[in-house]
Image (cartoon, rainbow, N blue to C red):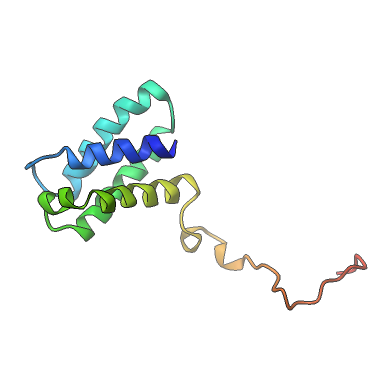
Length: 118
């Protein structure tokens, strides 16, 4: 799955050539290319695919000023795809999820109750 996202994302965003450099154009191209591949392999839901494309296009626009600049940083573009796929497929950033701030984990220094009383 990770390999699918990496290869397809990289192909999609770097194959845009000299076309318009905007978030909308990147999202559209990503959805078109990834959608075709996803239909054949049924790797993820279309909702997740849309989220990955939106996330990736946004991060590409933040990091690069032009398509030419993005084309020069293949590793960076691949990293963006991995980050977005991980965020979407693993449920996103904890800070964005409702109730995430109420989660707590025991500290190693906290005493452990072994009697079963809480």
